[in-house]
Length: 519
Image (cartoon, rainbow, N blue to C red; front, side, top):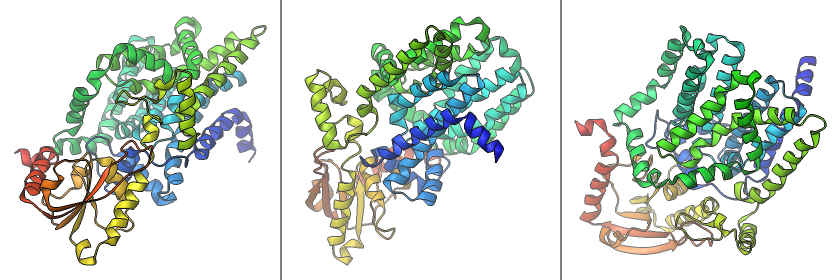
């Protein structure tokens, strides 16, 4: 008991920040519904496998356990990314303590992480990215311990870190490679030349082998997905925009992470940790050369914020103590501006009013979507409303059908967002499963549909060609829904064209990822 009490006293500041992180997310968890990706991951949790077409399996696996324990309500599901974000802020505080950081170092470093718009946003959403940030940080912790203790056997801790990190998001390879390269060019390279490096590599490969076998069995959808991203999204990356986004991602924390970078590069007595500065630079360079998305680098800043807390504590010694308070004031004041855009503190109606005020100040660019137009809500926020209306309308209509019609009715969604929403709001497992040819849903779709009727959600102009009788039975009318006006159709007596197009879609989606089909 005394040990626990002593530990709590020693880590009281870190624990307070961790608690603040958790409470911030729980208090805003129900202001919006699920974002479209969350519906996909919850669907994957019902169909566990060693991989999915666009994501590794860890998020689905953890979500399955989490929902068994806590249920799948909005608050319960939002608790999961909040807990991962809380664990990250605790680990960052632990690192500052290991670096002998005092009260000011902890407060500055952890305030930077707590108020970062990027970290607030990712800890709000059920997506692989929050897990990715956590495993990037744990990887840095292992290298930190390796360098601090000068013990090559510390490398073995990378096995239980990098393997689940790979299973969470494949992009962990970027930071792992950058850290490895930084180690090689640093004086610590001798720590790599031991029996522990091959043991670490072998252990890690063994743990991720099931996922690699899954990839092989499905014709490596990882590479197909990356090629698709390169052609449709990554190729549009403009270097100027990429670099500008690096500043906005962690806007309040700019003086802290820059301070940490300067401190690592300039302080000779702390050059043992300089490799974290090189790893940061190499990560940025790698992602720029690969034309990756700007937010792929988010987690690379965490270690800079840790060292930034140490830096400002040392720089702000008497009589310059006031400088530290200025840094804190700057972070808090700038976060007031960015907070409503990074955390759903305002409900949709209030957020619309906030957007109007931003527009009056000439800052309506914050509400611009991918279509280049300014809307009433930011795009991510508009992606968190309207799905419940869709699910309810579909199943209310299904309930209105006669029993004989229900028995021969299929439910289909044109993209994974609408399919996942209908899946989530499905009242009972005896109701028909939702089919879709998009993302992971194509793994579960039947090759030949057996039905006489279909509830079809989507924009396809081929609907009249697919059925002898077609009826528009509803639309999603939520005023702020990103897919506002999304139509709900009811078709009867499918035509030959539907079956022909279905087979073609199957071959182009699931078929090309089924190894036996390519032989």
